[in-house]
Length: 270
Ligand SMILES: [Zn+2]
Image (cartoon, rainbow, N blue to C red; front, side, top):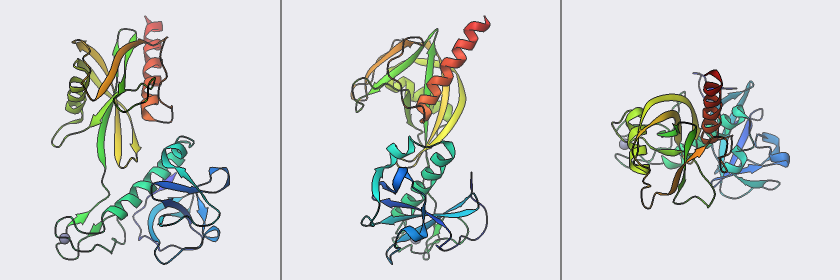
């Protein structure tokens, strides 16, 4: 488990472990190992290292490289995340998000001053001219598994490959509650109304900085009407006859599996 802590962030050192990124790819050694000891690579002067916290009493840093150091292979973040248990998933997600924050906040968004200094204890950069604080960006998104009798709703987004179905999901708008976002997204994307909206679970999704907030909801009224250009297909699927569902590493897959389990238990209990 990763400990974030409130102590001063250390500088990179030889006893730490490093997560190395090249563009949006992760550099791995044999067996897809992404936690790299200091002795396995040559840090260079251009390397920007961000402290991520302590992992089993070892300091973890994430570094971005301009070219691939010898002895490493690149692996897509998504592919690598799908291979992880929950603790490793969260560590890798955090490292990627912190590195993205470091890369994307080189200058103050208000006055344009260069932001080369990080806060010694917190993950924030404070503009030396106007004092504006720049934190890692986190974008909340709702994702919903919707039930109607013994079926759940699955949809295929406009960009998704054929045969790939998932839940309805979307970004929370400014000034909106999570529940309002759930109702709005469902109404906009498939034209139905839901009730009994209840929170289930959450998961960081580092593409690049979403926090997915998972809900169950029950169908209330309306006919499925997919939004043109957004949703190509949406249908009710009997829980005993589902098409391909998302990878269970993702909250999307987990929501569907949990919902089905709950629905089966409710049926047995009747
Ligand atoms: Zn500024």
